[in-house]
Length: 387
Image (cartoon, rainbow, N blue to C red; front, top):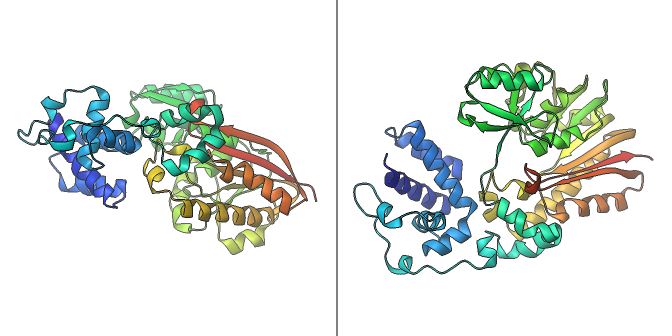
């Protein structure tokens, strides 16, 4: 595909996304219908689509419309590209700009940060002086991180194994197990280091959350909102734990047994009823459903689909999960509450409310990370049951 043809493909995909289709589904459907597109074409189109979604407001303003065409045109202008050479109408290229596209308006302050208007006061209140810098960081692609499985290899050995397959990685300061991939990221899934369980894909901030937990050998640990099990496996790699995983939707954990086998660890999957029968636990981690505002670089759709009603529903769910998991912790045990959000109402406000509801708890520590620290935005509050 020519560069201009890739733009046309991205425009069509973005139009489907703007009409309500999930981004991954739209990309997959295009790929299946476009057998002529090679792996390089698919990767380039994917990058165009996600860059446009991260910068949806500013690109729409620069392109003259919030359409697939407007977003791609605005993205080219933001990059200083030669629009005339690519929007030329020849072959599979998009037609030349016309009408409002010829006289785009400069983005406003919030548009230039790609920040939804209704969320701006909440984000400003939560991030303070870092607001603009964090929002700028969320407009750009996230780094690729790996977690070294210390049960299989040392950090140095993992770096060496990756390098042998053309994947260049370096340690990252957020966590002792974190590697940032600087070259060859698209080779990871096909590498022996990945297949043999030496490394897993996991954000460095997510690894930092696990590193901050009191993982003592022999402890009974429950990952209550396990999802695909990234944090479950990260915990398993660091200590001799009796490890359990639960999720409100068990289907999210369907790949966890195979991943655990590849990593050489044991994890027992529990239903909600099982968690109550197996209680009490020494440590429960509740990585609660949230706005995902700390990870909008990776999932930019979430920035635009979040509404006040949806956020209120998430806050209510988080409070319920805190009450549910607090009841599963033994006296003297710990509860770790985590989100990949940068909003206070999902983070500190939830902890203050829990402590007001349950006086038999104390706060032990707090970890707050934003994309300015290198990884995703993450929050962890560690609580201890004292009564």
